[in-house]
Image 1 (cartoon, rainbow, N blue to C red):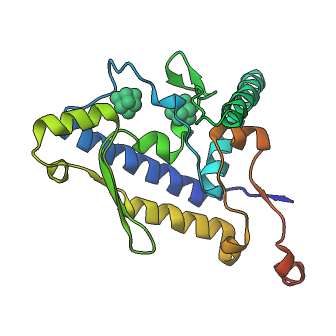
Image 2 (cartoon, helix red, strand yellow):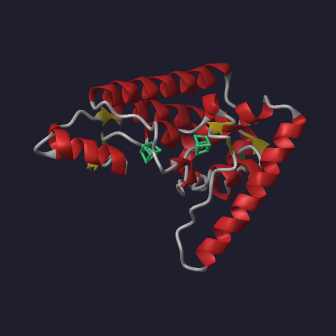
Length: 215
Ligand code: SF4
Ligand code: SF4
């Protein structure tokens, strides 16, 4: 197994994509006079799954920068998180467990938190690679604001996610190479990304001879 590490350029590109996501989010939030301040909910207990090797590797860059004691603490919390989620799923429920990275309302890996953590809240739209358009109404509080201010939801400002998602897909392709489609799909919570360790790949069976010859 070989660890997937981001080159300096790819790491910088992810950081820039994330900053652009935040900036797009903030513009729409400002137009809607929306913020999370005073919200009775906390979206960090939402059961989000994440889907790219690149974000997984970037999360690990942030995690490795923490001191050992802190890493240990977050790892223990992540293990408990996974056990609680599995118990909820065994009961047939969607897990709702606080993210192990949340500390006194603050994210322990704020600058390395994943895309979903940066985009959930305000209305957004995106076009999938197969051409299908998707729209997201935003969180329940934001939907209330939109309903009050606009006759129809479509009139509300929203984030167009497609260009930044395309950039993230380009990073993923660069990291994984032409064989991206041969590797297992990532579908992991942040806690799983931590307890599994940094992303690794083995040579796909159908390609093994070819890769060994390349290396
Ligand atoms: S995104 Fe919406 S629901 Fe989530 S914490 Fe912010 S205001 Fe509350
Ligand atoms: S990574 Fe940070 S922002 Fe994302 S859910 Fe966990 S605590 Fe919240």
